[in-house]
Every structure is written in structure tokens, then in C-alpha cells.
Image (cartoon, rainbow, N blue to C red; front, side):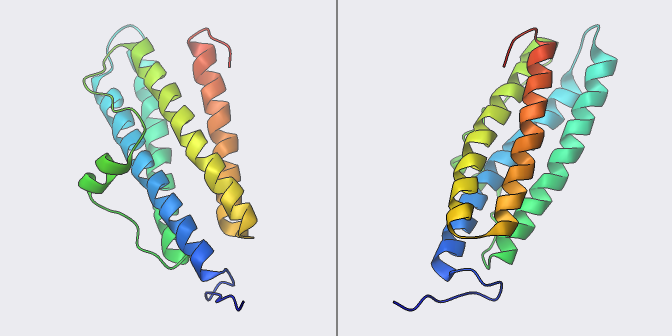
Length: 161
């Protein structure tokens, strides 16, 4: 059976499936990003100054990651989702609404990253099978960074990983 390769040397059907998976990740990252913006804006209490700055750091980074994921989808030959309707339909990350208390905000980050990590590990395995080093490397980097963030947030909550 003859395999059709795209211009970056990946099998077209596998690249298409990976792009679909990345669109799911994109939708979830967009919800995560919006959650971070919301808790940044609404945080209150004695830890306001530290958390306000930390949440800004996290949403700035998430915004960069959203762009990188969308560009990877384009590199694979597909179109990234770009409507709130698509995001809300596909996202599994919990939506945080009107969260202003410190522990609840940090818990939302941990829960969101836990969901993102599940999706990223699926993509990591599929990209490995497809010999898609670009996507594989991206997932590996995201996983490494997010695992550390989960550990730090859980330490802040005085919980173990």
C-alpha cells in the first residue's frame, strides 16, 4: 500500500489525525488561558500581589503556547479552530467562573493542567507512532513544564503530587 506523504514528510492521514488531536488541545488551552485571565483579574486577599503576578506570568505563557499549537496545526496542513463555540464544545478543562479566592484559583490551575497533561500524553504517543518529531518534541516540552507547575502549585496548596 502506497503511503502519501505531505511536504514535511509525514503520512497525510496520520498528520490529519494529529492535527485533530492538536485542535482538541488548542480548545482546552484556550479555556485554560481564559481561566488564567479571570483569576488574574479577580483574585483577592492577602496573597493578591504574589498571585496576581504569578497568574499574569502563566497566562502570558499560555497565550504563547496557544499560538504555537495553532501554528503546528497549520504546519501539519490543517486549520486551527478559532471560535469560542468550537472551544467550548471541545474543551474538557474545567471552566472557572468568578473565582477570587486563592486556594480555589490554584486548584483550578492544577485541575486544568491535569486535563491538559492527559491530552498531551495521548498526542505524544500518537506523534511518536507517526514519526512526527515536531509534534512529539512540542508535547514533551509542554508535559515537562506543566508537570513542574503542577508540583509547584500542589506544594503551594500543601499537597503532594
